[in-house]
Image 1: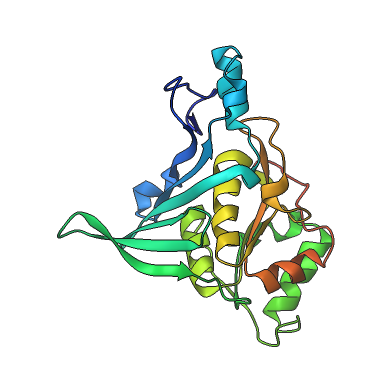
Image 2 (image 1 turned 135 degrees about the vertical axis):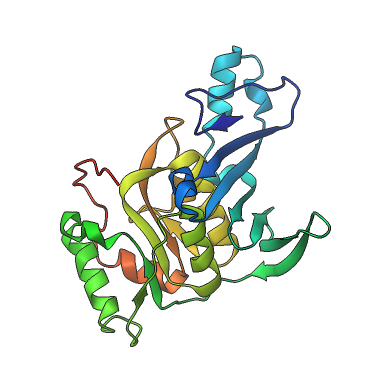
Length: 249
């Protein structure tokens, strides 16, 4: 098991068939002001061909599988309702917690992200730190001058799970253009869900699931959303923020 909260993976069992990677509480700084938080996870098969290696090395390499090898991923959104979205590689499905029974009820079967949305989600206070490609893209879509003839609206919670969930349901694109989000236990699981719902996950240049992790806490830019929006975004060239002065909030 590998977690954002631990420097190194933990070998829970020598015989367990699965490897779990997780961000146990995404957006924890939001708790004090009652902004939605979430849990993100991905599940891989254990690589039995590594069983001969020392424990620490075995745990590390099992956790550094590319997203193409995910067998399942999901998230829980803690908000006005508790939502559990999951995919086992055959579509993305959403469940809602029924507090009267303590059970999750299937409320969003076979979610399909709209091919194109009308919402973009990003902290545009960083606009002047963005590359020209990203600035031009945002300027274009919010003026209604892009491939979609309507003006886009901005919606940004600063909670990764909440912003992604809205994008999954309504379409559009959610992004963090600087190398801030973790590939292993944030970008890969959410990109898997996006693809299973007909969308796309990208670092602005490449498919997220095809990127081979080299470090457990490896960071990268993340763009998630509707297929047509993502293709249009990537057509603007450099959309990855290179300037990263170290923001306090």
